[in-house]
Amino acid sequence: MLIASLIERKRDGGRLSPAEWTELIARYTAGDVPDYQMSALLMAVLFRGLHSTELDALADSLLRSGDNLHFDGLASPVVDKHSTGGVGDKTSLILVPLVAACGVAIPMMSGRGLGHTGGTVDKLEAIPGFRTDLSLRDVERQVRELGCAMLRQTPEICPADGRLYALRDVTATVESIPLIAASIMSKKLAEGLTGLVLDVKTGSGAFLPEMDRALELAKTMIGLGESRGCPTVVLLTAMDRPLGRALGNALEVEETILALEGKGPPDLMEVTLALADEMLVLARVAPDHAAARRLLEKTLASGAALDMFGRLIEAQGGDRRIVDDPSLLPQAGAVEVYRAPATGTVSQVEPRQVGRAITELGGGRRTLEDVIDPSVGFVITAKPGDRVTAGEPIASIFARDKAGIETGTRALGQAIVIGEAADPLRLISHRVTSRGVEVLS
Ligand code: URA
Image 1 (cartoon, rainbow, N blue to C red):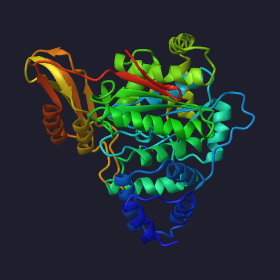
Image 2: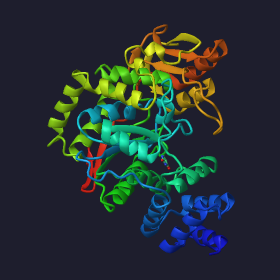
Image 3: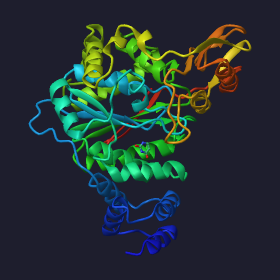
Image 4: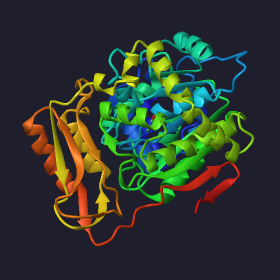
């Protein structure tokens, strides 16, 4: 197989056969195809797209590049959720213990922060001692015993996607619908699921900001899931502003504890409960959405969800005392209140700027080797549409030192726009299934 001729064919709008994709991915995983040729091919895919037969072959090759999780004989349904990435999105941390406490098994594999978006793995690792590098056999054992596990992608599972993803991150080839769909779905299908719920973000802070592209991504992932025996439901949710109030790794763990006590910010609770509700219905633990909501609210109110979070932390080597005493989480060296610079309506809280500012404060990575500071970030209480008065506290900045406070203050000055009016996206705008697209009102 001559790799240059495959690149040429894709560049000129042609197709690679399923056998060519299979061989290409196998050879790339074995280290026989150099990154520069793979980068060129990825860029050609970004511009030319993939035919459905190519998408199927790519997803299957990524899936087959490693081992799978196996839950044969497990009585509980095995369901997971995945988000396309956002700022302040800590729904996975809340959902896993909540849904597991309702009787659904969840082996959740997540990523680290990527670009301006935060990553579930970084948030979990803000908990002192918490380990995410579980082996697949450890995950299977923990899910059977506890009902849930949260891990990072290891070389055991979809290693080809791990390498391709790192390459895409540094070659500006993330924003391709078929590449995102194959990447996400190969990892989720390797988890041995009986159902999957996806949160596809739209708006300025999403990887695919436009609604029509988000819908196309949703349909593409549903197609891959359903045709491989994994019923898949997608909710489209707004990422034109951060989700919840806490933004930054340790701060988001603290907000997770509040949410598991049923006291999280309304937008965070609404998105989390909508996704959890879909998971319970897919798992057939609840006969319908109304019953799912009742079960979720009962599980939060009884303390069972928070208790499950403590047990999950303990099972993965973390300090479970943070559940009762969040002050045991890493604490920022400097904290300062940010006040509204003018009177008016908050018209924008720009998630990309906030996400990049967290990286500048040390809470995200510029290179793969960077060690992050889990304590830094923001708590932004103002939301688009809120009326504010000049001088009113609307956020807090958590930094390492005085210089970080100045960086954070400058960033919030740009990210939070106060004007005359706001036009935020609907928080949960669409529900997409194999039967079609529902516009939610
Ligand atoms: N998350 C993934 O796992 N892969 C992508 O390509 C984008 C987001």
